[in-house]
Structure formats: C-alpha cells, structure tokens
Image (cartoon, rainbow, N blue to C red; front, side, top):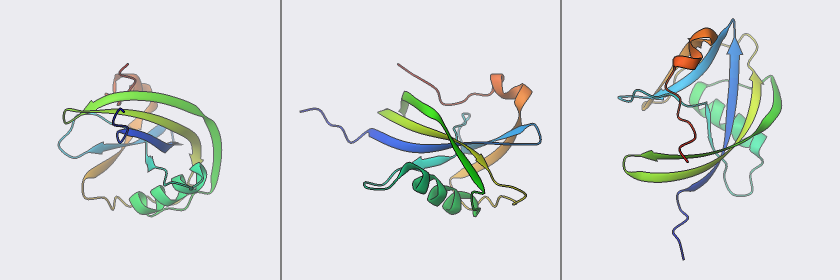
Length: 124
C-alpha cells in the first residue's frame, strides 16, 4: 500500500484588489502560492477557506465564488506532495489584512507582473 499522507485537499483564494493579487510566500523561500490551506476531514471547502483566511490574515470573507479545481504536484524539502486545490474568487471589501503567520509573508503583486512571479505550480 502506498503512503498517501502527502495527498492533500486544500481550499485556495484568488484575492484581487486595485490591480494587484495577494500571494503568500514562505519566509526564506523564493516562490509564492495562493492563500488558503488544508480542508479538515468533514469540513466544507468554503468553510475551510473562511477559517484559513481568518487564521492567516485576520479577515472575514465578504463574497466568495467557486472558480474551479486544480491538481498540483510539487516537491518541498525533498517531500513529494500531491494536492487537489478547490479555488474561489474572494472579495474582502475594504478590510486591511494583518499578516499574523510567523512563517509566511503576504505580498500584493501587480497583475501585470504575475506571469513572472515564481508561483508553486503543476509539477507533474
């Protein structure tokens, strides 16, 4: 039997405001990813996203809309991950984000620079 502990189901947010997109980046790393995180067993994807954004940014989602699902495989610290991301467009209104995670920095990236950003992507 294969070890499936690195198979993950996550809820991810696309947050765009004033022509910029919000992207987290692990401290001491060069790559970005989309905000959100793991869905707990029995938890709905939207509820998980609301929880994760509250934990990471101290914000409440004002509006959320399902976009789609993305499958992703990547290596991090010599560990192979296989991830299924449920992606939502999120509106935070006029709330200010508070970067409360000690291992992640959040950055607003201009949309026209997004193509050049090193975003954790499909590694199949």
